Amino acid sequence: MKKHFKVKFGYSPIDFVSVDELGLQKAIYGMFAKKPIQIGDTFIQGDRILSIVPHYSKYTGWNEFYDPKDTDDFLQIKRDCPNFEGYIESTKNYVAQLMQTGRINEIGKSDIELIENNNISVYAQLLKGE
Image (tube, rainbow, N blue to C red; front, side, top):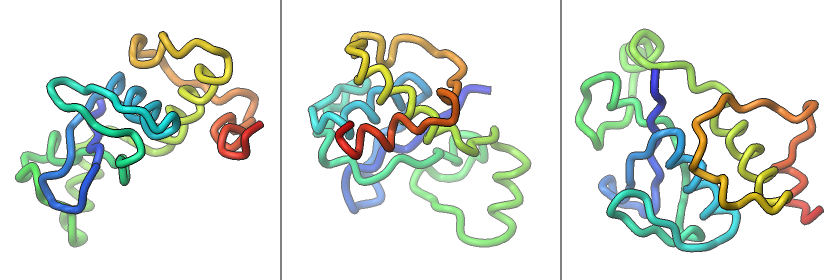
């Protein structure tokens, strides 16, 4: 099942863009590089991205701006949504690795299974400036 994410770039409930797995890679690149990115018809300054979270309403039928609040909501998420556990972090590692190896042109081009690199967090190394 295709995964969808909310890329939040402001504090209003409407300040987000919905992306798939490939758009997620682009958004993460924008965050890391602090560069503007284009996702669909939307341009976002990478340094203004506040968070990236699963876009549950794509699967649950909720209003686009609804955030889960109670136990019933979270039970519906578990029932109706794909498993997002570790996916964003793995994508961060993948994008960081592409950046470190000079393969920026591959970001957002390939919908592949993300594999941890021998349990070494490339993302953590990038944050440290290694």
